[in-house]
Image (cartoon, helix red, strand yellow):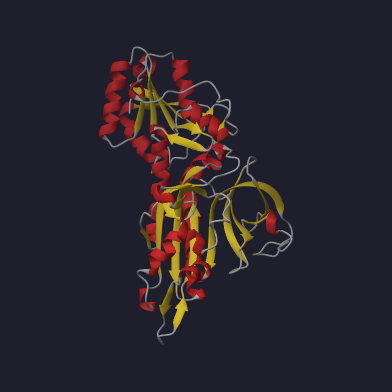
Length: 414
């Protein structure tokens, strides 16, 4: 993509109502645009990042047997009444349609997936299975804040699993837990900042699990065992004062951003909707369920909170909108255009700043946008038959020969 053709532009101005780093930088860099409090448009650069996050999540869900579907955002009052959540779920967006029929926008989808499963589950031979979707959710938060971390409309991957026995649910739960750790690793949340966090589990199990990324802006307080890389949420610390794995009492208090969670639902929703199956002896049993959530939009905001500096965003390689940010300096425009086309032919994702702007402005925008590799082509670099290569995380640049450039890029991203 050429910068001159980009729908959006960068801005030096910090939005007056941006109360977080992710909101400030993503807005200034032209990734998102706030429409109302807690509701954002994803602009071309932002949508590329969001889709890459979704692709990593989707691939891992497929690898553990998840089948993708898409459920409606518009849900009837009747299903929420079945679970007694029409009146008790404070964050539901409720409204009336034609004929005074009442609806809610989907805040979560247990009320839809459970009766849906009821139409296709009859025998133990139909189980187990798991299905997931990636879809926008709507919650009437009393105070939308922190940019993409707490919105009123946000994207969510929700996986639901269905089992004959608690043991089978337990086994699959562990499979999902490991898959989540792999997802976060691929997204760029390094193991040194990501903790599996024990949290309140509700009626069916002692614990559920959150996945927390350490950050000073995190809303959650967690107590971390750095030996085992697990933590305990502050809300259950009185019930579990030592590490659940090694029983150490040497726990360190830290702030975290919740980037995912998994729960064992048991029969709470299957009982509400009569989701049952016939076992091998033709005895009728309730289906056991689990649910597993990751918010791609929240991941996007969390990555910016964790990976940025005073100059802008620092995207991990796996979700960067482009692989290289190419800048041509006045006098080298023709060579810059040729290099841009050559890189595209090699399948390299390139963002080309071809604007008639001062070099300093181009460099500042490159830092703000945060693509991992900046390439500068100028009369000086052409005298050496090369380009200047600078990584976003490094202070110093180096010269790379044009003949070696494509190989260097592919090596960097291998």
